[in-house]
Length: 270
Ligand code: MG
Image 1 (cartoon, rainbow, N blue to C red):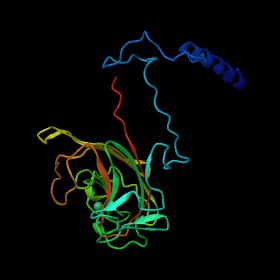
Image 2 (cartoon, rainbow, N blue to C red):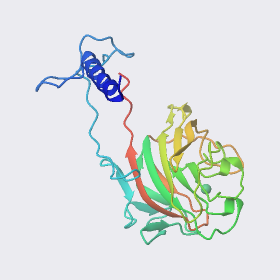
Image 3 (cartoon, rainbow, N blue to C red):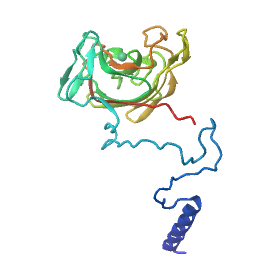
Image 4 (spheres, helix red, strand yellow):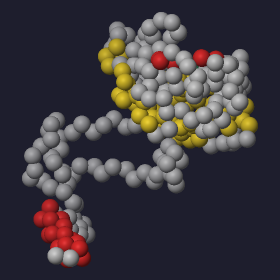
């Protein structure tokens, strides 16, 4: 059998298979799906349930890393209108389309608050690099203003494992050191599940975080033990279901750009 014949036989069998599986044009007014299939765990929906609500349409960004249509854009290169400082208006500055951390001026804090969230941040450490260990290009993404995903220029800069970029600082080292050299833009994508607290203030469920640094998974649904702490174990103190996104002032003029957040709806458990 020639290659062409094999390919055409394959195409015919694929079409036959598709039609056997029910892949056909949908008639107008007909709700695709089924009403006689087994119930999923939880019992509300059936497998392929025709009545199950469809996912909302979200238009993705033009390229990977661009904000999707439903994202809350916190910084698009222009101004700090979506931000405040520790005491009133922000003191960090926008230079050439990027926010620059200002030494000694405290955190930069989003005015809007979020719960479970998909967070996109790009950052760049000073070039040429200055300092070493934790003193080089240090900042941090402080989710709920307290759970720190470390920002650090540890490119060819040794430091302790749980202080690397992409670490849950003081708790979980990143699974890989995927940093680019200082001066280049680093890309963080973070999926954060907020902790829940009981009425007595104890933890009902801890926070979890998944982090990609430059497209490389460095935290995979890691349990967060508590708020960021230095030389001690972070602890939880109860808080509400939403909190701000903050950036840490660690004395280094780290730059930030293209910052957006998508609130993650609760998963439909059926
Ligand atoms: Mg830090």
